[in-house]
Amino acid sequence: MTFAMLVIALATAGTSTVAHQRAADVESRPKVVVVVGPVGQRTAEYEAEGRRLAAHARGLGAHVTGIYPPRATWSRVARAAQGADLFVYLGHGNGWPSPYPPFQTVTKNGLGLDPYEGAPNSAHRYYGERYVQNLRLAKDSVVLLVGLCYSTGNSEPGMVIPSRNVAEQRVDNYGAGFLRAGARAVFAEGFGDSSYILDGLFRSDLSMRGIFWSGWRATNVDASTFRSERTRGMTGILDPQLDGDYYHAFVGDADFRASHWRGETKPNDEGDGGRDDGPPQRPPERPDDRPGDRPGVRPGVRPGDRPNDRDERPSDASAEPAADRRRTTGHLHLRNGPGSSERILGYVLRGTQVLVLETREQDRPPDWLRVRLPNGSEGWVWGQWVGGR
Image 1: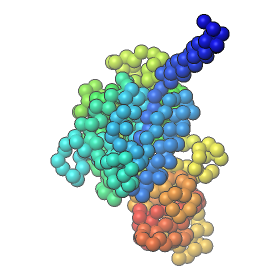
Image 2 (image 1 turned 30 degrees about the vertical axis):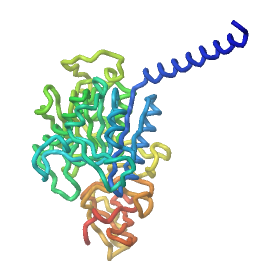
Image 3 (image 1 turned 135 degrees about the vertical axis):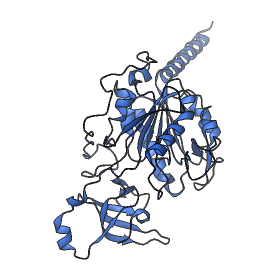
């Protein structure tokens, strides 16, 4: 062998070793797949939240694949989801029970995705439970559903709050396909920051039940558990919000621990209970929003805040005798400007009384409103879900 051939051989061997090391590194890290489906005018908002969750997962050490409109097709999602330890989906939801009978699994209890690559954000196609159950997720994986109708037991915007029984069925049905695909737990969140679930999976040894109760959204005001009718041995949890609606739910093995998910310990298929077996005795404190704690939240504005109406400052009434006070008819983002692309400052729950300070008319209704919340925070909200005077 000549000297030149020896140099080439050594270089090739070194490159191969580095490649194998990189492959081994990827294999050793949890695989996270984040999928965002098209949601019309709110697509940019959903995509921004999906990318934020993806970045958070990378910061926790995961190997992350993100799929976003207009390339969020079923074939691309199904290919990426194979072997996923954590599957996150944000987008439209189509569940059951709903006002659109009959029940079937072709379009219900699944994902709303691009019908073809390059499709407009106004177009989506539902791939229901029949598709989802064939995703081939990793064994004992976790699924996180964010911002879907029906998945948390909720209804579509503007519809009546469902009964507890209907909410249970919706949560149970929506999780069934994912649990058959290999998942051990399905978390469903209605709106807001869901990164606490990632923190619990990567950084704690809490059970899935413990992670569910660890977040800022947990109220434990009228919570309940139920036995899954769709998936044998699984448990559902409903934690209604203060206004009675359902935006925080779980179905799966509630005793399955984060260390089991990370592969550090062997799960006990009969459940292992533990110190975090139930909800906290009082709702957990929401994190303070100091500058830099979380992007897009102004100090003093907490996601999910719904101060009591009696906390309105007396000075408002005296300073503005003709005050335009209204009540929100849906959950809203509080933004720093009039437009869906403006930065999110916080969240306003349905039923909150707001003081309208300014109206910014649009070419097409609804208008944007600058409002003051009962705790004194100010920002802009979409007028579609704000009641009349």
